[in-house]
Image 1 (cartoon, helix red, strand yellow):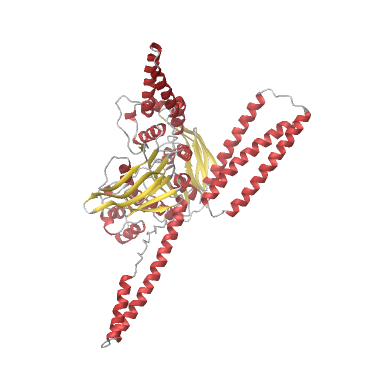
Image 2: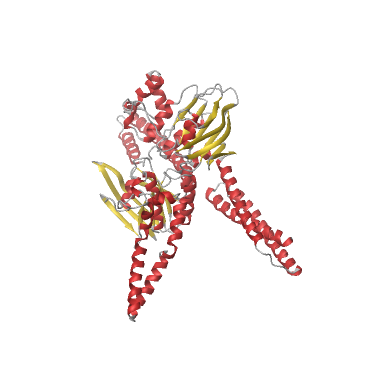
Length: 622
């Protein structure tokens, strides 16, 4: 059954230019769908149409009967005195109305023996329970903690929050409303890694329907099961997550290119044949007619469009050969801000060629840490020593240019003191070409400004590149361009990022800033995640074991204990057998990403079960 049905949708904001041009698709109940498309393709416009914020010029939108839609990008206006807590609890307006009516009915039933109020009261109790009335307090705390909306922020006036914080609180409100259809427009933009992972787990267990516009490729891989790409105002469908979409899109492009080349080859052959017959047919009506018939056949041929060759970033960092192993030596580094210690006593060593991701929750001081490394901020104590031949370049989170009124071309010529032709070549490598190079920098989007700043870093003596959230404000294609450029950079790289796809691609070492100190993990992000999961599992098992030890142990008769041990050994053998079968399944489906994820989840569950069985066996054996 379809929760959303869109047929022939047309929407234009400029004369003779349709953003959506006959868009049609259906989303079934409970589906999780990713909406992709270039910036300006009409993704946000589509969401506003679905939410009823604007009307289509043509076409129809049908929403499942009784289904409620929640749009994350839409932040309602609240009374001035509303706190964050008030906004979250406004999700319970329906339950508050039911509760208020129940209280009135209780008063009526106390004064009258009429059966009607009792029947209505029973119906309202059922509704109150169905809509989660008895779990309100638990749900508010669970969602607020998951999205890192803590005590101080909950008491703060909503109007005083930043735009990102308001978006986060609004997301919490939508979740608490138990909306049937969630429209999420860049939901991970203002969340740190921990909050993003919480949201992913929530959405995976969410019983409703989810449509998500996102540039977070890791999020799309973990949450969605289908992709709708908006191209030229119409929909193209991919029946899988983001990784499937990438592979399938390339397969379709290759297939289209092959078909196009075959058609062009056949058209060329027919054209040459028609030309020869025309030349030979002077005075010969039969040959002339045959020539004309071939030309009509060429005209009738269904011509395949040449696939767009998505221009890749041809940028190359010309790094300087690094002599010496030591890039950065950090000793006893400490920094406090407004009476709060961000970090203290940090001792770290970075060596040549390492690629390090600095991660941590929002507000832990990651950007401050980078600014101290670059000399833009002063540490309270400690020191930083750079290798003697280290030449660093820094891409900050907020891009600023000294003279934003200069053109793109003049900015590079002036800032880097390079000839015009070299500047144009470098800009072309970063997809600034034609009239684009004459635009003022102030007219560029945030992503274009990041790209321009990165272009200015392409000097010949860089051997330490420091990046602060480099993929912020970039669409997926721009992120891939940047990644291709960075792949060619072979020297030391230190970056802050919440983009797990980016981290996974580049990091060979993880620095995690948490609780005022930096932990050092040597390995990839995937290895780091597995390490954290194992540590959390071990801590939980240890906690459960300690709790069991505190309880008085029951005395078990030897004969009963032997039977229980034998039973446990059979269960352990069966569990180990299942794990072996999973090994065979992983080999069988080694190229099926979705199947491997599902097998991985089953393996995790089975390993947890096996751990508990071993613990019970150990206790009984003692």
